[in-house]
Length: 175
Length: 175
Image 1 (cartoon, rainbow over the protein chains, first blue to last red):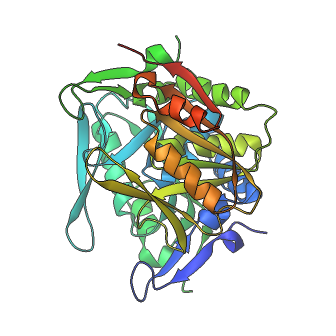
Image 2 (image 1 turned 90 degrees about the horizontal axis):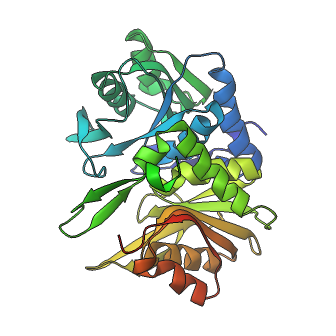
């Protein structure tokens, strides 16, 4: 079974008209979990990577394992107010209003190459905010690596046009 | 450096009088991340484990990697309203009020042995709620494995008295 066929699609979640891609069915399957992590590891092989950063919460499931396999440290990118020490934050637009993500000010050293890992890219808003916060801390983005790309929402294209490498293992398009 | 010496202690967080144990400094260090994950893997070696479950969000960083290394699937235990499909939930007491955690109804099959992984055990409230929800889904608890135990708060003792095995890699006591 492919990664894509292990993802559950849920109509009208979280609201009418949205077809939600649920990766819990992928990750609760031993081969699905391994294929997701190892697929991303294969795709970044040979890249200079000093740290892995992931956005809470689903990104943590993949990012911690990828950091361990690469032999580098892991940085949690968290929602506002969740980190206990001094932080650098970045706001980003939601459909209504704004949200804010943060990292600790000592999470990234100047010049470090950071791999961003998340489960899915849609509009790319959270990943773009994560890129900005890593760069403001002095880091460089090695790539953004996700399991699922939703190209209809344009996030990967937007990041690539801004000069960032985007890696994905499967796509759901026009479905 | 030991795991314990890589954990940052932050006075008066999240409120006056609380000494917060911050594992971000442990996990952003390559050796600290590896020692945490591999230390828990060593401690569960030989146990019958069919799935790993972790509580959002910090538990996911360790749990996903441990599931991959064990060759089993991963189950996210999430706060109320975060899972998109049908769920089983369990309420637990906070200092003021209650909170609720949930898993998908298809996350655990009857008779499966589930290893619960989290970063830290304090009063044990979240872990106990996770145990209950896994058991209501038909699963059995192989053990609860955490990096940090705060024995002054009694959580590990409470779980052990209820018949569950608790594994921890370090303790902060009377400090």
